Every structure is written in C-alpha cells, then in structure tokens.
Image (cartoon, rainbow, N blue to C red; front, side, top):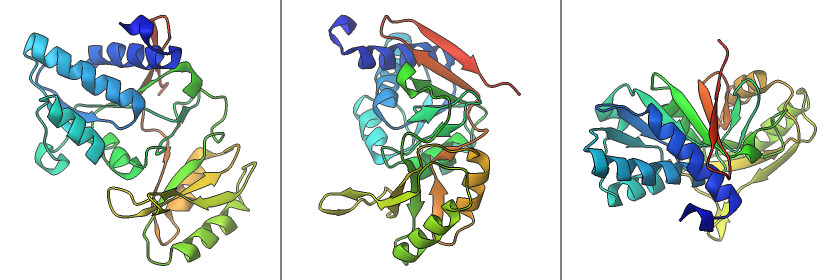
Length: 240
C-alpha cells in the first residue's frame, strides 16, 4: 500500500505514475537512474504485464539495467536502438527554467548521452527537488583518472571566475577508495552553494582537458513531473 510509504517515497511514486502516461505502445524509452527512476521502472513493468505494452528500454546505468532485466522489460543498447522517443529520469535539483543538476547516483555521463539522444526528456521528482537557484546539491563532474589532481586544480581555478557561492572540489569516495563510474572514471563533487549561470559553467567545465562531462543539464528537459505525497502530480513544461 502506498499509504505505508514515507512521504517522500509517495511523492516519487506519484511522479513516476504520472510520467507513465507519456509512454505509448511501440516506443523506445530511455530509463533513468536513481530512487525516483526506480519507481518508474517498477510501474512500467507492471503496465507491460497488464496491457501487453510493447516498448524497448535503454538503461542509463548498470543498476537500472539489472532492475529492468529482472522485471522482464525488453532492453537494448543505445547503439542498437538508435534514436529514442522518450527518456524518463530523475534529478537532484531543477529550477524554473528546467535546468537540472544530476549525477548524485554517479550515472551522469550515460544519463546525459541518453537524454540528448531522444525526442523528449521528462524529469520525475518530488517537491524537494525544486529550487529557486541550482547549487545547494553538490555538482558532480566526471573526470578521466589520468591526471585527476591536475584537472581538479584547473576546475578550482575556473570557479574563481564564476558566479558561485562556494568553491569546494572534492573527489567522491566509495568502496574504500575513489568512486569509479560505470565508464571507469572518477567523479568530483563541487560544493558551489549557488550557480549563477548554469549554461556558462557547463560549457567552461567541459572545455577543461580531463573533464568528461558535468551534471548540469541545461536546455535538455522538456518537462518535469512533480509528485506529491497525497498521490497527485503536476506537469511543468519548459517554455520554448
């Protein structure tokens, strides 16, 4: 029963259930990573079984692939699927312009590749993820391992020229050492507090040798579905 869930989980489930209404028979879907995306994958599997819905899913991480495969969702790689109709994914933060911070779960690179290889990206979130200005959640940045300390110094120097409230650059840890992404890279988390110009910061960070990708998704999401603990949800469309 959903009433037995914590309030935040009820909101996540409500967002996932509403986003499922965007899915049509025959679609090729990008399947996101994270706690809210897990709800979507669960509910998608239920709908496939109940309706005989024909879809092909492209997971954005090994965790999502394992979950979807265990539930019997047909899967393909992005190379095999080609262009996707829709991607449903969560976010760590989103603002009024539907700029996002993603990558708290470490899958930002595959998530961004999938999100930009589809006709539409829809974000699912609970109300706590909506912010006036991005930056309270640490910004993940994926780095190649070679020369990582030098890359981190370049990132720190770059931040001196950006409208941010903090400039902490921290190598993410996990499993007794540096966290390793699905693509074999390091991730650093930037404690910025506030990001005044997300698009410019994304561009400038990506210009640093050694940076693979950032968790800033600007101009990518077309809509956000916000789920509430009472089971209701609202859709925020990006103004074009």
